[in-house]
Length: 91
Picture 1 (spheres, rainbow, N blue to C red):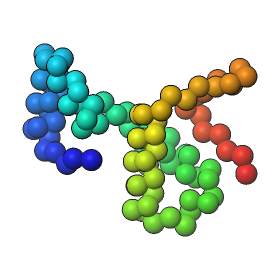
Picture 2 (cartoon, rainbow, N blue to C red):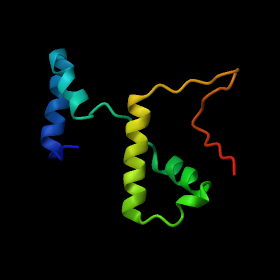
Picture 3 (tube, rainbow, N blue to C red):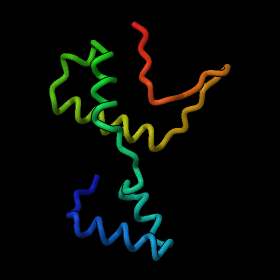
Picture 4 (cartoon, helix red, strand yellow):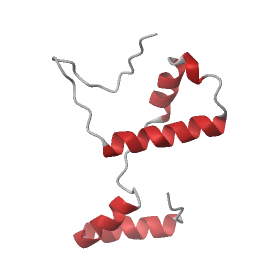
């Protein structure tokens, strides 16, 4: 992902509000990507014992990959399963 200063980020955010043609640029730079809240992320990784041996850098990369997955894929429940932010673990 491209690193940007907060000034450039602010400009792009304001510019895309006034100039919808720049939406492709926001998408390209992942400016619309929702972030997983830290508290929810901590809850998720605490419930998954197999990630306890990962380094802080690996956990950060996992979070970024998870955010990218949630940004690019649609997850729907089947058979009446309701998808929520509540983490589920089966182990």
